Every structure is written in structure tokens, then in C-alpha cells.
Amino acid sequence: MRRFFRQFSPQSWTILTNLGVAQLVMLLIGVGSSSLWAHHVSKEVFGQYQLILSLVKLVGSFCLSGLDTSVSLSAAKGQYGNLIKIFNYKLIATLVGSLILGGMAFYYGSNRSAISIGLMIAALIFPFYEMQKVWINWLRGRKQLNLFAYLDVSRALLSFLILWLLIIMNQRQLNVLLAGVMGASAIFSVGVTSYILKKRENQKQEKETIRYGLHATAATLLGGLVLTDKAIINEHLSVEQIAVYSIALLFPEQIRTFYSIFNQMMIPQLSAAKDVRSAWQYLKPKLPLLVSLFFFVGIAGFFLMPVVIPLVFSEKYRESIPYAKWLWLSFAVTVPATYLGTVLRTQRKLRFLYLFELLSPIIPFVLFFVLISYGLWGIVAARMAQYIFSSIFFALFLFYYLNRKKRISSPI
Image (cartoon, rainbow, N blue to C red):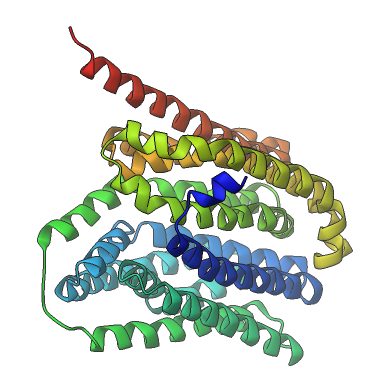
């Protein structure tokens, strides 16, 4: 184990510490917020809130999401002129997104007025709310990770405090809670984005960087399909079941945080590798411990979930325990294979990228419709299938590129 940890530089450990502390605080805020919802708000209202947030994320995924990569690349090169141009593109896209959310509000307006009003509120806030993607990616690209961590935690803490204050004031209607929580994040993002735009140091532009972001948008255009799960649950089951499903997903989704910490540590070395084989040689000695680590986390969480969920989210969400256990375990044991995908991404293997971004959302989207007849277990099974598919896909493509390299370099 000592050998594993010595493979990372002191600078990497500094980054790990800063990001790790920030992610831990974000985790506590996220769990704390969900605990407030679970203890003090009805399942119906919490389910409606989760449905609206999922629809906001769905619409956001179609608002030129690939330009977020262009923001990071432009920041790394100090191209402030690109920032202005990308910001304008994103603003136009989010205004269109607001119209789409308004259309959704009209769809739900016939017999689900609370959801309809909530969507109208979300539509008004949406362009400002989406600005967080600009400043987050800009600060990451500028490698201002300490400032990014501080601001990201501050934004989450502000939303948490607004939620807490509203609950204390006995304001538990969906539209009030949604406007408060989403609005707080939007106002914060407007302030940070405005500050960054005012502090621009030059007018440098590079069309290729923006063009790459548009290509990335095309590659990930179907990614939002995986966000349709809660809308499908609402149509075929009930809004209360969305609340149960959201609690079941909460802890498994936090494994992404654990994964991202090591991922961010390894990305610089993987990106600097001259080819897939060199990147694989860097990752290979670390993989056994990563597999063991995530396997242990998966087993531990599987047995702890029945204790933690009623304690943190109250007895009324005990129903979510079996779903949470299997989602946690399946995600934890398949996460190490995701590092294989990082190897291919950092080596810019476009064939892999386009095929994965096409198939990865389509498979669970189809399974959501096929398996929804089995209730929440069908949606959970579709999620688990997505995790397993991704793991197999990463392993097969890495094997393909490694052997392809061998064949090319072998004498005829």
C-alpha cells in the first residue's frame, strides 16, 4: 500500500487534500439538505421537487453542454475573448431552454398544477442557474482549485441555509422551496460569473477551441436521456415513488466523489502519456488497490445502508433500503473500470468516445421503458445494467487499443 501512495507527487497530495475536504463538506451539505427534505417535507412535495430538478438537468444537458469543455480549455490558455463568446452562446441556448421548460409546464398544467407552477418558476430562473457551469469550468481550467472549492462549497451552503430558514418559517410549499433553493444558487452564480467577466485580461480568441466544444456537444447530445428516469417514474408509478428513488440514489451517487478524487490526481499523468500503452502502464500497478478499495466500500455500504437510511432520512424512507443497497454495491464494484475509460479519454480516442456517448444513455433509456412494469426495481435494474455495460465497454475498448498498437508495431 505504501508503494501505491508513493506513486503520487506531493503536489498531487496537496490537491487531493484540498479537493477531498471540499468534497467531504459538499457531501455533508447534500446529505443534510436531503435529510431536511425527508424529515420536514411530505413525500409528495419532495418527489415533485426532484422531478423538476431532473427536468432542469435534462434541458440543461441539451444547452450546448460541450461548450463547458471549451470554457476549461480557454481558461487554461487565458483566452478571455473565447469566454465572452461562449457565454453569449450559452445564454442564447439557456433562453431556449427556458422556453422548453415553459412548454413542459404547459404539459403538466392540465392535472398537476403544483408541478406546472414549479416548472414555470424553474423556467424563469434557468438562464441564471446555468451560469454555474461557466464559472466552475473557468476556475478549473485556470487551476484555481482552492478558489473553486471555496466558492462551490459556499454556493451549496447558501442553498442549504435558505432551505433551512424556509422550513423553520414553516414555508413548505413546493413553489416557495424551489424558488428559494434554486434562486439562491442562481444569484450566487450570477455574482461570480459577473466578477470573472469584469476581470478579463485580454480579448484573445481561438475559434478551434469553440469549434471543439460544439463537436463535443454533438457527441454528448443523447446523454440527457439517462436523466429521464424520474419523469418515467412519475408517469407510470407516482411522485411519491420519485422521492423513494431519490433517497435510494443519494448515497450511491456519492461514490462518484470518491472516484473523482483519485481520477483528478491521475489525469495529468495519463494525459501526458505518449500513447494508450504508456497510460495503461501508469494505471496498471494502481488498479489492484483501487479495485480492493472500492470493493470494500461496496460491501461495507451494502450492510450499513439499513442502519443509515432510517437514521438520516426517517422511517418513512425505509422502503428505499433494498434499492439503495444494490445500487451502492453495483456502482462501487464497477467504478474501478471507469479509470480504463479515463485512459482512453485522455488519449483522445474519438471512436471510443463517440460510440460510448451514443450507447451509454440509449441502453438505460430503453430499459427504463421496458422494465418500468416491474416498478422501481425495473428502474434500479436499468441503472445497474448501465454500470455493468460501461465497465465491460471500457475494458473491451482498452483491450482493443492495446492489441491494435501491438499489431501496428509488429514487423510484417
